[in-house]
Length: 455
Image (cartoon, rainbow, N blue to C red; front, top):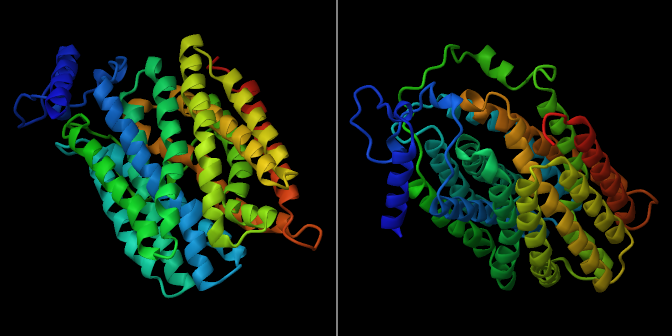
């Protein structure tokens, strides 16, 4: 496999023009694309297609990131919290909110630093490694936490670490993927984000009494798969990269913002995604409690149901991610599929709002899964299509785009418990899921009608 990857890297290097193969100062002539210097000339040329084995590495790394990030969010944290503070769903929301708030600060900073990093290993790879190390270190903190505050600190480390690694892999995509591959590759990576929690929950569900293993197993998978991407995915030498603006505290704060008038498509897409994810994260954070209430199960016993519904959703996730991503590239259209995905997800949320047995919960989950997969695969491609200043500041704008998901991650877990209190009786998941349906539909309509530069 290594020989095959190296051969593809050499072929990719040969395919580059002479301007793209200019060596960095004091550097020898590169032997692979991982040593190719970024130059201003390359900024004006379309990226060559990414070779198949590199895409395999990218998809595998995304699978690892998804398992390490999502399994604790959807299962492991709730089980661990139930050991420390039984029945306190409000505390889980607080933990998610704090984690998202911290990443709001960290994500843009790491994106800016990544854009400016000068190293023979490239701009993105050092941050992928740093995120991997921090994420792995969070396992011991969460697994051995003696109280809620230490558990929250561990979760913050986890979100910062795996979030940095995942964002760095995303920045690599922004740097390298040509428009003709964005829909298909985004579909594959989105599918991995759908499948990885399924596999992760199947692995850790039998170990719910072992707090270390329910956190350690997903992290170990991530370390291996992200490590392979770091070792073998080609990345350009960035030692010759120069930025005219000094990186001062003022410049850092300024980079957290952008002028919507300068990039209207990026701005409207950002707003639509913000509204969609505000609805989505309102239910994601409380899915364990939803299953527990509607099926009258103890919290640790929810794992089996989640594993079942997640396993069944693999088919719909595959159809939505790969099928819709492929159609988007094939037809050179994004917006109709964005609208379709959000409306399908809204339908699934309405079904879940009134679900009272396992069969109806499964139907709602499958329809929602199809909608999320369709929106996410094409949505990621659309993000890359409208990204401003991709050549110099991809990391910065990818981080700003991430705000559309992270800010809802702060707001939704705090506001969702208020919806759950409507009526004064048991937790009102009907109101919560209906709100999710409304928000997701509004977000999709906004993107489909206001983004003009992409079909």
